[in-house]
Length: 380
Image (cartoon, rainbow, N blue to C red):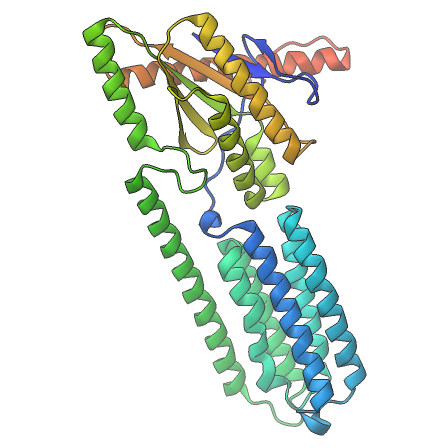
């Protein structure tokens, strides 16, 4: 059998229906889970603060002497950098979207360009400063973002070399600076992905999902093996519930993968708090979870799904009030002759049936809200 819970109004409790919203599959990303969003924001804030303090120290000590044409501009840039450091630290505590990290990156390029423009005779030698935003991109942003910022850094270095070269343009220093920046950023990104891979492998070996802390597939299969053997021997009962988050892909796309990771952690904590101690809650991957329970009573299963749906809705609404908060769920009870693969396959089939029905229910619900007649089509 398959059931799902959904929310007609996101502020209401989930109503229990035969079909509901379907949850799209969550993208995997390319190493986004390696470092937390809070670390990214705090690192960005520290880099802004370091830039500001370095500029103030230069103005106060006159380290570059007459090479700096307008110390006042450098001092103003330092103040802006320090203000941004404070703002970025606060934004990190409020789970701001990833677009603000990109805004900080572009702002850092602007500040570096303004500061270097005040020392044109040293600009080509100080272009290595563009390594700072590149290292940040390699540590915390996606591979596409890193490629973009490498291109931006190269453009700024070429501009500095041409604009402040005077009568003769020296290609070699600029080329060496570009090579150093690109190789360092690439190596940093490679190390980050390797550490991420090691972390995931360690988590799998330990039986824990690296992101949520929930049991992963290994303890799920081990529990099912024990319970299936017990049910076959003692004529006992067990069921597997598959649960999928509604609208999770939209969270990743609209708010960033970092916020999506935080959402999964909040959902996992809510499920662990709601489930009984005898029930196993595991993450299968993406935004899909499995719950193993020792009952096959449909009434009890429905009650379990409803409790979980309510807890998940509360957790998601507390994080993102404007995002979807519903779930889709399907379940299968143990039948004589079932092994792990067959039982999970039937539970997956039930979940897929719920998702298919959800697409029709979603269109019907929207039509009711709009006061229009609804005829489900192939893409509904």
